[in-house]
View 1 (tube, rainbow, N blue to C red):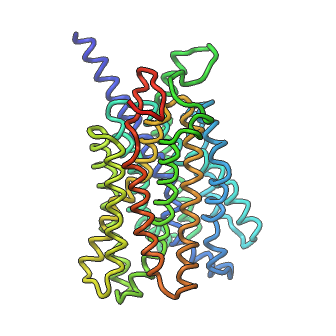
View 2: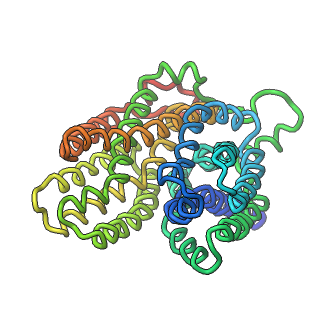
View 3: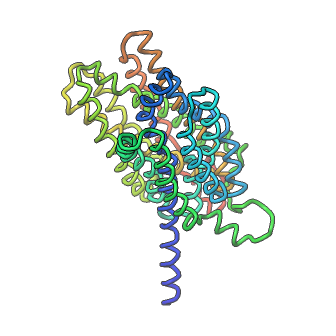
Length: 419
């Protein structure tokens, strides 16, 4: 019995070391997204570029992620997470460091960001979500919450670190230090501890043929016809469109409502902290209650934010409270779609199916800010967009609340009808 207890403890420790490695790995993939705003000014001034050009790198990544996420999802199913993530993290660190060598050539700029996009596709949320889902059954919600908190960790600390590095060493060396410091930590932890369900299956399978994860689940074709999966996809696209649009235009909405620039900037801090809390609390709830109820009620709560911003002359505490609720709910979006996708499709072809979901996430994230700007240019007000946020948020929540119970894949049940 002592040996069995020791083995169980070793298994527990190995799984949670994997969670730590995946979380730090995911945090490194979010570093440049969180730091881009601080590099725009120095780069545009040095090369005489427009702000649009200096900030175009993120747009290149979003476009290529939308186009190629399904392909890289296939690679996950074929090779597993570790064989994608480790070379991806190394390439990511090298590309970030190479940004220090920019010479003002626009074509060089586009080329570097194109290579960066390849590294980003190899280390995007699909990779880390697949790692947690393939390893955990019990405790999957909390594992996903901890892994995906890596992005919130980067968003919280990267601006402070980057501002310090630019101020002391200049923008070129700031890129090098971010790559060498954060990148080395992520690569080392993943090399040592990123041994998830795919690797366990590879070791058990040996040289035999068949899929890497020989588990029940839907094929891609079945998933595309499954009503529950389509509801999750539609809900994800709608909520990403309205919430990312809100995040991008939040500063202008607040200053247009009479907030000072300093207050508007400070209002995002508690929302960011609420995002971390949202991941952890939602993770615990997902392990205890049906995901459709947790997801539907959490996403539905975001409607409070849009209503708070619509109230004329709303007190500051009402607006900040609304932003905190949105931050909490926003922190759960990737976690919910990752959990629900695995629940309704199984893990048979999870990488490919979630790659399609990732394309929808990228599409919504890119469309939302553009639609927000178009609405303001057309009506000279964000009010129509905020009302659209109310409607689409409620619709997104309704889609999740109406999901059937998910199948018990241990018994080989099919999706669509529920258990």
